[in-house]
Figure (cartoon, rainbow, N blue to C red):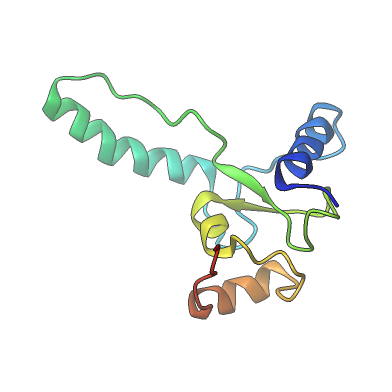
Length: 115
Ligand SMILES: [Zn+2]
């Protein structure tokens, strides 16, 4: 059984070798990297200007791999934004079987107990 770290390592290697391509849009909610960056700049750029500091753009991947079938299927991923990934976090058992399903039910899912 792969750990989350190992599964994400497989994704990274697959990207480096061209087997997977990180898209510019979330498969669940449809938000684009451009929209996320623009919103971040609007809010944090304004706050930085009030503080007299330079704006610092986001420096981590904005679209990440969600292992919807579990980490045993490391390359079977949906590409989701950080917000959708947080909502789907822990839903790796294949019960949510398509991005469209996730879109319709994810806001009604009970919180995951990570204990
Ligand atoms: Zn999303």
